[in-house]
Amino acid sequence: MVHYAFLTFSLPGHLTCMVTLAEKLIKVHPDLTVTIYTIDAAADKCAPIKAMPGLNIVTLKLGPNGGNVKELFTYSLEQPAQLADDVLLGIKNDLSSRAGVTYPSVAVSNQYGSTWGRQVAAKMGIKSYIFMPSPMIVWTVQMLLPQVYASGFDRKGFLEVPHYGLLNHLQLLDMGGMVDGLAEQCRLAQTHDGMLINDQEETYDSHYIAALKEYIPNVRFIGYLPPATDFSKPPAPKQAQSTCPEVQGPESLVLPWLDRQGPRSVIYIAMGSWVHLCKADQVELAFALEKVGRPVVWTIKKYNETVPYRPSHAGKDYKERECKVQCDEYGLPEGWLDRMGDRVLIVEWAPQTTILSHSSTGLFISHCGWNSLTECVSLGGIPIVGVPIFTDQPINAHMLEHKLKIGKNLWSNPTEGELDRHLVADTIYEVMGNQVFAENAAKLKRHNDRRWNGASGDSMKKLKEFCDEVESK
Image (cartoon, rainbow, N blue to C red; front, side, top):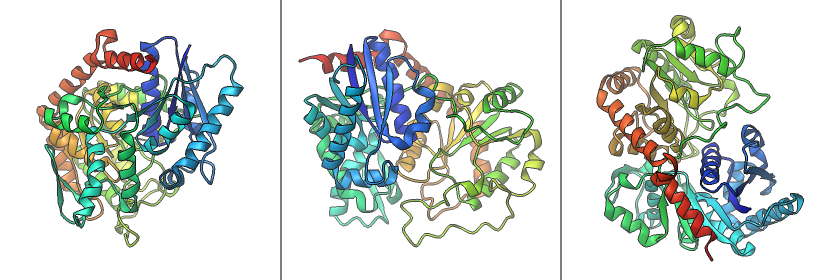
């Protein structure tokens, strides 16, 4: 029995990708056991997937407050050695408590674990790899940051990323005071045994790939990871609330509703589990949807249950734009739900994989988390309208419009711009009305399907090569 240790924070996209990667590796290597070590705060997110054969998820109390994600990220940059010791202790305690589990032969850290994951692996005497759940361009921009800021870049202009085009200052991730720590992550990446990237190599020019491999020679592009089995179920006991109270539970609600809609007619909206639009922008989006006249599934929580919108790059003086419209508990215009009627389905949680793969879904309006974009490509092959808010989302939105050509980015500067109902409606008309976007998305899906098609698929071959490399002396 072979054992791999995965190290990750509980950011939903990162955890989902790690689970999917584990599932694919177990298919390649049936004798493999994978243990994902994450933080205690991830317990609810882990509930639906703990029963997957060959996969174990162990939550650890890490950091000064036992698992707050944001504080732990800062802690990992400031005290990576201490965090490595904490993780190592947790792994040793876990191994001693489980009978029949072999010692891990490799530690695989997500991109933000490069500063401490290598130390864990070194102390255990095993190999160490990085898994990059974001596109390669995010890593490249991160590598450029030290020289960009050293050159006096004032964050008000544009940075030209080689062979990629212009990215504005917000698309430099929301670095703030983290530049030194992220630069250290990039530097330490060179000390690992290799890297796996959740991206497609053919998206980039060959000399761009060559430049990356000069920095990290052992890189494998594994394609867009399809969602893991059984990860689309909500953690118990939380259930979705809906605008149709007589129907209980998200699965029994969403699927029959989708079945009643026409082919590729539905607009699905989901802004991820960490961000949401400010109320004023949400109102503009709602009015645009009303104008467009398409059926809508919108995953949205009650507004007073969410953290007030404030992008991390906005600075301490940022003020949320005033909303001049009376809104309901979801931050939607009063009377909007009544006017939309059966044409809209509001849920607090939705089975995203079910929606994206359904034949009635024709457009995804997304915050552009990379995990959501790759799910959309691998499941539905449908176009996307991007509404990026923070971290890597503006870069991902730039990618979907200018490189993949499967949709449009509504904005590139959420702290200075604002949504406008007419622009939003026009963008929806354009993306859903122009078959080029749908054709490009469908073509990308077919290509990704081939990559994961059994043992002969290119992605599965690369994972087999990775397993062989890990187990070689």
